[in-house]
Amino acid sequence: MARGKTQNQRSRSYESDDHERGACEWCEYALVITLATILLIGVSALTVFWVFYYREGYAWADDLPDKQFNLHPTLMVAGFITFSGFSVLLYRICRCFRRIYVKLLHAIFHALAFPCIVIGFLAVLDYHNKKGINNFYSLHSWIGFVAMGLFGIQYAVGFFSFLLLLICNKGTAGFRASLVPVHAAFGILTFVLGVCACLTGLTEKAIFSLGSEVYATLNNEAIVINAIGMSVVAVAILVLYTVRGTGGYRLRKVAAQHPS
Amino acid sequence: MARGKTQNQRSRSYESDDHERGACEWCEYALVITLATILLIGVSALTVFWVFYYREGYAWADDLPDKQFNLHPTLMVAGFITFSGFSVLLYRICRCFRRIYVKLLHAIFHALAFPCIVIGFLAVLDYHNKKGINNFYSLHSWIGFVAMGLFGIQYAVGFFSFLLLLICNKGTAGFRASLVPVHAAFGILTFVLGVCACLTGLTEKAIFSLGSEVYATLNNEAIVINAIGMSVVAVAILVLYTVRGTGGYRLRKVAAQHPS
Image 1 (cartoon, chains in turn yellow, brown):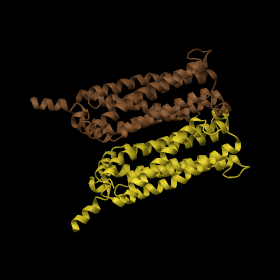
Image 2 (tube, one colour; image 1 turned 180 degrees about the vertical axis):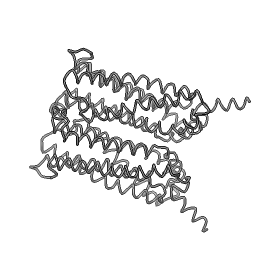
Image 3 (cartoon, rainbow over the protein chains, first blue to last red; image 1 turned 120 degrees about the vertical axis):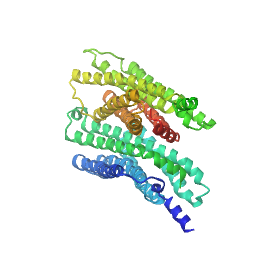
Image 4 (cartoon, chains in turn green, red; image 1 turned 90 degrees about the vertical axis):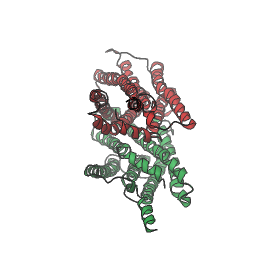
């Protein structure tokens, strides 16, 4: 009995089915965590700095539509990059935690991303209506629409399948196991589409706000906007490399064996 | 001896170490091939249509810089999306071919992408110089620069490691095996950065060519440009899903065992 219980507890963490990490793997691990923390918090901090220093801060009022617009890039970067990025990376990195804690962390970070994306979307919709600009005309808005749709579907499916269905742990194990790679693939897709939406949005904003001629002189604000974009790119490189890297094989194998 | 030879020949194709595909997997396989062919050729065809119908075609002459610029989006979409996309997908899909043929196909499609990207880059560099526009000021150009750099490094490393080092098959097996997941991860990264560069470039071009007010009316040309962008997004979804999907696990396992 005691042995069975220990084995069951052991199998609740990814690491239990895995070999012990060597010094090289621990170095990679520490480097990824440090870089990720700096980049994921840095990209949102840089966006807030840009808005306060060059775009006069935030507001939500009928007579200050431009300040209201500023909520859009800030919240979208926070939702699609910072919180989603942390959520994906933590799920991948925290291999020696118990699985249920990792899943809760994953769900909590996505729960933080959710209101950011919704309010960020409402801010720009209301801004467009106040300024009499058409909605959903640009490539950026089309990409953003697909990204938001995928995000919503992924969150609903993930929450229902990987947390709620634990009520019937044994009966749903096979279903959950088969869903793991699909959820992971669409999760990466959603993240990449969020990245594409941010980059096209920053390009739009740079040209609309600065004008094409000032943008071409690469003034200070242009450098800050480009730096936000390149930070988003760096986050994407880090997340895609970590998720798909050499360790991914092991995680997938374990996830298929122990889906809960 | 005979048995050893047969085993060696069998291990030369990915499929040999795999289970036989079921009807469902064959359906997914056929669907991916059909969709990929339509989308990958379609995105380049749509770009050529856009240039001829709305942007007066191609040229490379001092007095026609705008026509020369048109080479840039066309060749970059062909290089980073169509040829690179085919190359990545074929490597993933052709599991029952002998590995050396798959690798040659992979190298040939990337060899087709290479001149497209180089000439596409030279076309816009020369266009900027002719028009007196600064180079490398926009977020698009910064992303494109990183994408081109990664593409070059990946091609050189891949060609040297996975084709040239076959001269010493046994001696380099361990090195090549350890390089497979790194090459695959950076390959996906390069493709995603190419997608980001295309989408930010299309956004720039739409605003510069149409003007922000005409773009907001979503006229016919705006719809065509957005359609090119969404086709690029669709290709990205297909490639990322296929590469990372349920079958990826098996391919990775086989690649690690038989790196050549």
